[in-house]
Length: 249
Ligand code: 13P
Image (spheres, rainbow, N blue to C red):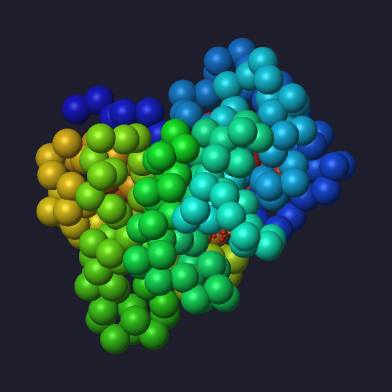
């Protein structure tokens, strides 16, 4: 069976000043000739989205945000709405990243509300799930990601493009990765939970893997069953590293 095109997305997290735009430029230049067989996105800090839109204007690299508020506007000092991200040039938005679930106490229900806001604004959400090390060691990994999928994907999502990212918390920024068997098990459980929640119409939504993806392990990870792409942190900050991952897809 022909594999569909992989979705490779860079999550810059809270990294990137104006000077980092040259990395986006280099990425765009390298991919402009249509050489990449993958769909590629970059999610920089919100302060860079509008300027990055200019840098990426004539290329294939898509833009995204890293979070949004559940309301379209209002008295929420410091927050950014999905509409604002779309207005600035984003087409994608990462939601429910474990760093937000942990550091900002985001619940599944809050993530689901943000997903609804994202689709109302025409954004394609990338909804993150993943177990902690303690949960994996307790044998709860599959139950945790299944519950997160059930709680974080609103019913209305089935008619819209979206992705889910499996990011085991213990693999993020640590250099540790699950075995391909563990990745395949988690992705199969996530696929089953997506279909149970949204129906067969959602059977093609890509499930990305995230957590210490590097140029040297990307090929093996991306070839695992049900891996529809990658969500890349540290290795997406430099165009050369990110291109190494994109070329492995
Ligand atoms: P690293 O690739 O730096 O481990 O980060 C993964 C991640 O959290 C992407 O969202």
